Amino acid sequence: SQTIHQWPATLVQPVGSPLSLECTVEGTSNPNLYWYRQAAGRGLQLLFYSVGIGQISSEVPQNLSASRPQDRQFILSSKKLLLSDSGFYLCAWSVPDRGNTGELFFGEGSRLTVL
Amino acid sequence: GNSVTQMEGPVTLSEEAFLTINCTYTATGYPSLFWYVQYPGEGLQLLLKATKADDKGSNKGFEATYRKETTSFHLEKGSVQVSDSAVYFCALRGNTNAGKSTFGDGTTLTVKP
Image (cartoon, rainbow over the protein chains, first blue to last red):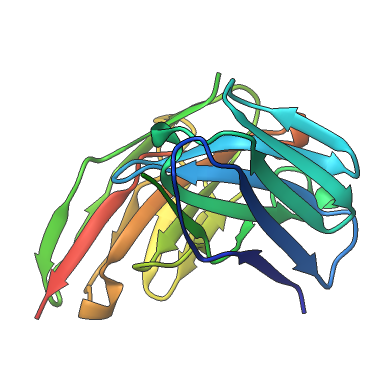
């Protein structure tokens, strides 16, 4: 069966420090991968998505970046965190050959607090 | 672009009460529609989905019908339980650009015994 894991689960970082959140999917090949951010009391904002290794699309301008060094690995990074980067970050994957009928499968989430 | 509008929360109900959470959408083409649920401190998980007009998705006593004429996908449950307390997200998935999903802002449901 397929599984998705992201880590760390909780992170407290000072302003200006770097960030690296990692997400790994097991049990499937060539998944579509996504990073979402959920601000407190608000919905999900799509940050990045990827349809293959090295292929990253950014949805919003920001100081975050994403990379996909391997087929089932998706990394969210920042060189210098801002206070506004605080939030709950969710990695997700979907089956690429189901068009738009397939659902998203989410990781457990990573809660980032920037102080 | 695509958008999803959900009924604002929070919603507080007594156990065994009837639940409706309204969801309307704007989209081009033929999107699929989803309801996800998020329990405290966890990621989202699929609750139900419908992929074409007039389809009814159902799971765990929850139902929602894809109404193209009213662009709606309202979530209903006849008798809620305390364990249904969670945040519910309505979402649509378009048929272009890797099938990106657009989410509503979420509705927090609290069920009291």
